[in-house]
Image (tube, rainbow, N blue to C red; front, side):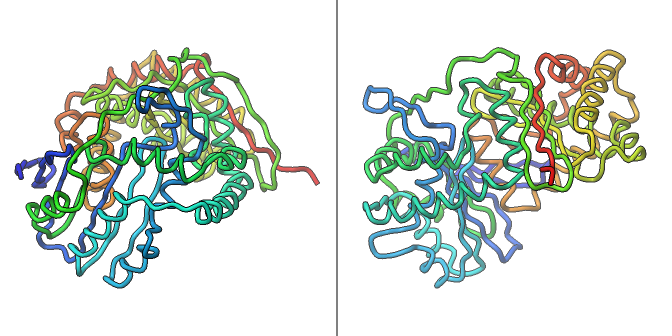
Length: 424
């Protein structure tokens, strides 16, 4: 294992790439009783079109999420029983670009690690179990469809993108999941769940060499070929639609405004792009910003207002929203404030305040084992070392943030999604 010191983050990280291509990362926390293991695959809800055995394949929306659900079942039973027997708390999630399986434990770490590695690398599906899961996921889809928070987001994504699969829900639809069979699940597992397309991150008081040895002993010897993915043609900066409206059982209007930004550039430049976008959001509508303060004092917004900068394969966007009486007014206020800041500049004292707070938040996030693991995995899949964020952060200037606001938070790039209260 190669030990890498990150003095500004106060961490020692051990890294090793196995012969099968798996990246093994151990973050040493010698004085903690808790241990955390995170086994992730670069495969998410957006990876529905890919090349397999020389042929392009189109798979149903929601299949990565469906596969995540099914992986916990093995021929001898559900692995959650094994985790519970060894005192571990386990779970999994599927995002747009990643599926991850993880557990937390204070004892029997290596037994639980072997269980994690074994079940994620060993698919087992039957017609009966896949059909049963379809009903469970259909209920989950129906619950999201009835959730106004989800609807306002889904409607915005459909406004922003014409072809990019970011416009599709990770869970799929009632129609798409009907197409999923044991064969399609096996095919997707074969293509994506290969060691060279995965990363194992362990955080806590464990032996890095033994972590790597366990992975070598259990996982396949071959890493598998790189998978070519298709996220659609590069889109223009303009959204597909300008506005989406829906009525639901809500007490006051809910809105999300989105601003379409250039796609991620990959590598460390993508980490820099992410930091600039996050700082721009804090400056524009963060809870210490002049705009937020003024609108809050006027009673035009409440504490629900917030947003962020999100980066996905082939897509990135800024979103802001909340529960407000007049969504279109707040949408216009945000857009106008971005233009003012981009043209007139950000106050130096305020920028330094936002910058200190943002950097402090990134340092504090390293107190969370989960945040460490997710950040390390996302960085690896995107081509950068997350622990280099202090050096990248240092290189970001006020002019970079002003340019981001000036170029991206514009009416031409904007779309608005509103869920209005249903009239009695």
